[in-house]
Length: 70
Length: 259
Image 1: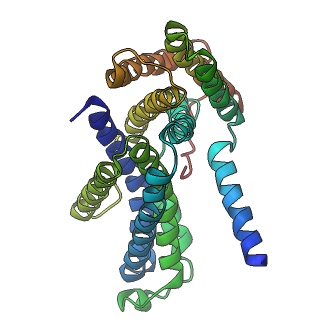
Image 2 (image 1 turned 90 degrees about the vertical axis):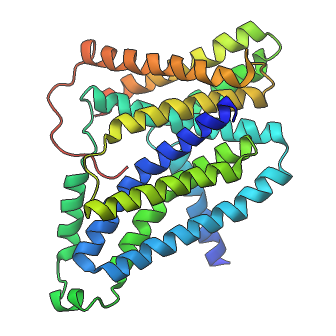
């Protein structure tokens, strides 16, 4: 039982570190991008514009934030 | 071969090659300082474990999970991974964080592993637990990212074999070059490769997450090329922006650790 708890914890920590780590803004940004895709999928032009644009905004914001921490 | 298949092969090949260069540095450092037998055994066991993970997780992923749900999940993972690689590559190109220095990482690893080693034992090629563990950990950790990329790209497009083969070819190729030059591959333009792969992964991530959410991309698979072009332009603009608007205070002299 102890081993299962330890492995589960290690597995969870791996995914947390992999997806969130020191760039939580990228994870939150990804959720926003996917959310925009779901909300706008019925309006093709809007989806095709907004989904990549939101990802670009997330990238640039995270890059500028990374500059402050380096 | 469709556009998405070509880009998939290039993305998996590039990502695997970059990660393999980093793993090779650790294996060569371990082999040089603790003995080649243990280092190669550690690297070999790690490769077998990673291949088993692809086989065990990949097949159920493709056959049991609904395709749209799978595409949203893997698209999201690829997007986070790709944007993170791209962000680091932009910050490295603009001088805000240090370029990944394989030579320095190699020297540091050799120095830390050489402490307390009996040179006679190294010559006799006895088994060494530390050498095995360091090589295993290096290959396993660097390889985990490759496995996630292979699983994500392979399962979202039902091309697991193609993705696995691309990764396998990259691993074999980097290993052969490493054996030929008998050292870590510090001459590889790692940051440029990471930027290219970051662009591809981000493009794939948006494309598959959108497909899973039922966004109808113009030109279908061909839109991946448009996304690659857009992200390429954004990366170039990002570097220029960081250099002009937010210049690095001073050149970063300390090499980055393995990341």
